[in-house]
Image (cartoon, rainbow, N blue to C red):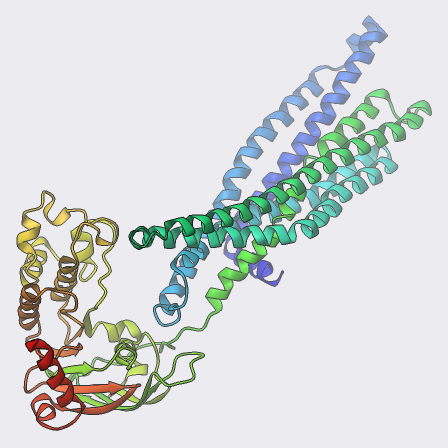
Length: 584
């Protein structure tokens, strides 16, 4: 419940919208109450007057109650329409703010703290869980507030006619609006939570299946995945069936209590009518007014049974919002240093929950304009080193400085503005080629885009496509080959004029001709920059390049490549082995 109270606090900036929605909802309920009660009184009075004769008919004022009926009918329609607008405006404002807050937190957590999260589950939190929380005000807070205030007001009105009738109405509304919803909440808690969990798991499975459809079909694994999704669907359907059953009992119970309360009004009114304390029209007013009063509490049982799922969604959303970021950002960054050298001293990086260090006692100095190659097996710490430099993860030991300024004293966005990365895995977004290039520099004009494509040796291909720069690239770059996608990444890098260029396995998976062309384009782009290359291949390393060999997070060898290759160390043995493989 703590999460729902916290959610309610998030409505504070929209409290005027909330108050307006609750006020209009209350006006709707009271107008409906007045409409049915006055209509019953008016019709009964007209019937009594009709039986009384011509003189009584002339004495009876038909116009005032008729005008009252029209007034309540008009107010009911207008207030209901305006209330829907105001309630939804408050809800949509909260959802927009909550979704932006959650996305901003995901941005802070990525990629370091989201490595083990499923993309479909993150999508479920950002879309499904946030949307579900929108029902909290619309279906719980506002209806409950309207019912509570309206019940007291309508009971007080009944008490003017007969105090016992006021108490009977208040008790009936209390049972239908409090006891039944609490019973629905207790009965539907597990089913509501199970429905949320099944729906989120189903969404995550479907996203995974669609993203990996080619592999599933290749390995004939689509049928087990279909069975898994079918099982998830059955679980969700079972939970929804149980919730529907509970909603049916809640609705039926509310109608039963409403009918019993209306009968109680007749039982209370009959003796008072016989004693002359109430007239016949007054008894009709109590009976029909009681029936109308239960409109205020009718939505509550079905709404309260969903509280368990809302609480589960709130927990999932706030769990992500409260997760500590992998890097603590300083409030402001110092001025950009004039000299951009990179000095690492005794660096240690350990991931949360990990026993071993990803990087341990790493010492490295990179002068401006240098070419540095990081070697090492998978898991040696190469990616961790890059993620640390980009401030995606933090270092727990040692010192990392750019131009004499400690890395953790610089905001992440300012650090990343110094680096351009050509990653091993190129993310192509659905849209046009232009959209994907403008990610690197949003103010680039067409001339700059074509220069970047020329440098990446992709311009001829793009000119041959009907759409040119606006050619669609499909889902995750489906219309591009692997080599073309890598060249898109290279074109992005060409658009960013930064002092550091990081290349992660730049020619991995490319054929020799494409790799040679790719390397030529990289060489032109690297002029005047400090280049850090992560690779397993030694054939593209220059004799004067500085090489660093990582093993289990530690630097085991480093120096000028020609010197390391001439020595009898690990790099020399690796170079010899690759030379033998090349001759085979």
